[in-house]
Structures are given as structure tokens and as C-alpha cells.
Length: 127
Image 1 (cartoon, rainbow, N blue to C red):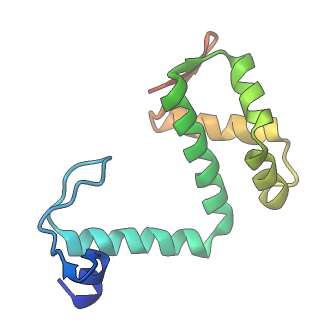
Image 2 (tube, rainbow, N blue to C red):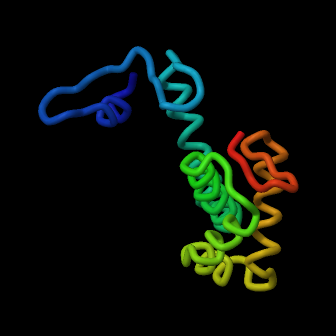
Image 3 (tube, helix red, strand yellow):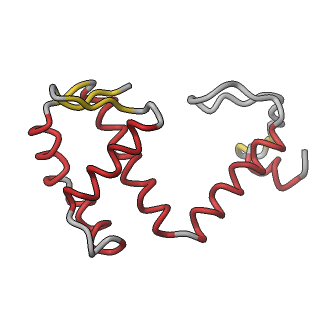
């Protein structure tokens, strides 16, 4: 592992060279070098495309809310979206031509398409 990667695992005066990683989501990995390279590449991609980053940030917030609630009616979901000021800030900055309702409906459809959420007549659920 390179010295720049060792710094990533530096605690005080001691360094830890990790043989495996457990990110808390996804599987445990042993190729730390490759995993750090992939993570840095993804971060660079988000920096290059602020609109993509904004969409991703909104979807992450939506997913965390579904993890918290597990299931919610459409009315309560819409109320939460409208009452969360960060969504409106992102919408106004990056998606001014879209309504918050249209934008979040589109983002929810993306979460459903990748299996991260479910939506039907009863409401929205974590998947």
C-alpha cells in the first residue's frame, strides 16, 4: 500500500495498514488499493458533474428517510419532501425549470428502478 494510502489509516502516531475493508454497505473487500481507486474515481465524477451530484444527494436523503420510516403514505411523503428545505435549495440551484414535485417524483422512480424503494397505491416503502 502506498504511503498516501497509509495516511488514510493513520491514527495519532500509529499507522494501520488494512488488509480488508468493510464499508458498512456492500461486501467486505480485500483489495484496498483498488477500492480506494474506485472511490476516488466516483468522487471525481461527482465533482465534474454537479448536477449529477445534486441528484445523487437528493436520492440519498430520500433513501435514508425510507430507511427511517420503512413505509409512508404518499401524502406524508409529499409533506416531508416539501418540508425539507434542503430539497428546495438543491432544486432552485440545479433544477430551476422543474417543480419540486416533478423532480422528486422522477428521483423516486429512479430509486424504484434500481430496487432501492417501492411505490404503489398504498404509499412509498423502503426496499
